Length: 130
Image: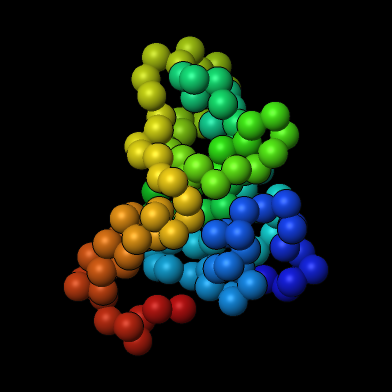
């Protein structure tokens, strides 16, 4: 990601990955443009049983799994929320879409992204990655 597109208000744990152009972790993908996952952020706000907001920075390519940084009082914090929305605009919030929460992006990468990468690597050859 180009440095000028990286918001200095985002937590250092996210900026650390983006500044180094570490964005592709098949099957996970980190954002390339700030507005890239806006629809997932809206779905989360609509469906989260706790009524929270997130700035979504990652998605899993084979399903509707996303990760976002919790936004409190307009400030993007370190807390990562891993979630699976329904994208149902008339959601009645009957079930919790949150799969897991992490202290920061590094913990999310260590506990979710890397195990998912390892699983995919056991099934697919590296030459097949685009």
